[in-house]
Length: 292
Length: 327
Image (cartoon, rainbow over all chains, first blue to last red; front, side, top):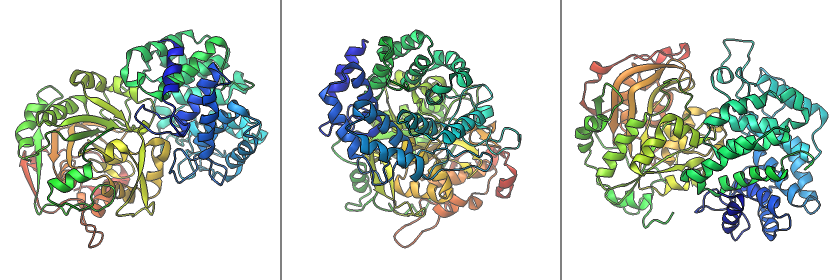
């Protein structure tokens, strides 16, 4: 499957409201729209589809500066806010300056950080009511770094958090609390579960400005990616490896093979967008890379 | 996702309750005065499971020709090593055949609760092979459109849940749980399994929004909002001790099946050596919340067919904090 074929497929599924769905039969949602926007931007930064997609994203901004995940949602999402901010900045940072500032303010201040007794860091959950998690924390850190809005102390806290929640095997799971110094700790998630590829990739993306400290996460990608059948995992991994200056051709081969062969994922707009985004790295384009 | 009749309409019609509000906007019917639960011995995961289940399955007299049946297994995660934390694919295969033989349009759906790479879990767990063998569609509920559904019971105070459209538009839902202990709830069976329909991006991976707001209340709220119509509990191997993820495999050699999911959970508890009357969410679900909210099922008058519960009882190890649940 050629990346340009995916682009036609993606664009053909843009909805009247400018957004994109996860699946062809679905309605517009933030996550699919943001990744579609990033993929389209990578192919054609002047595409008219970008403006419409951005308009849909901005329609999801809540009064608190955060973003809803879909029309009719009732709660700002930290993960969604961060992803929308990355997409809007990529599409047109100047046009969305005020909204991006509101989003950054929400991420830095309004979001009710969930603290765990074993850890000292302020980190993010999926929204105000979930536990902290590696995935939303990584997306929030990545977004705030893209926006130039992450205070140094918070960057340090994030680095500490990811050090604490690192799996014994290397890499990261969803980041449920574990006190590794206490064998009776309530959750053995990080010591028993194998690392999750998509979470590991997202953490690497978030910490790409500290490559030396986090580079060993690439080993997890090397080891886990051959067994992955997940376009989200493989795409984020390819983008992360590209950010670290590694060779992601094997990852892209696996990703593109999966997309060609497996109808379960091939027919999803969301996965097509992720795959197209990952393939942009072949032309050294990567909107998740800090600095462009 | 075009459909000619919604789950609500179908159920209202088939139950002779035209006009009654059911899924997502009403409490549902009162349980039958007497529930029937089949306890089916099945010594191993094999292609024989369907033949073990079939005679008991027929007793329920389901009429589902042309209806959309959603099989909701528990595939919370798969981390290899023969660890029985998910509903076994051979049990899924049996259910696909049994409901397919009735002329139903069968789909399988799950919103995996721990990680987002559902497709990898499908491969690693053996589900992919079964889905392809039977050409059955799998819907990743984590990527499904959602609709806001009012919670009839609202024990959590959330008022609404965002439920995947595929679930709301299905005519008939089968909760295919795994027989497991649970480190927060005591046990996880067909009612708790329904938390797995909710999308992670909204409720978190893991879905701790529901686990922290009051787990027992959340389980019952989900049950009143998306009530399963049938339960098949895989207890050939279950998980004991620190379930649902980190406990040990436990052989019980049974499948539990009922058109009253709460009765199925009640019987499964007894097989596990757990007193269902002491499991908080089962207690909540088994009594009328008010005169408009009848119990979610029958836990008091249950006719068990197949194996006697006492003959298959296998006491599952319980964490210290749940030893008080021992039957």
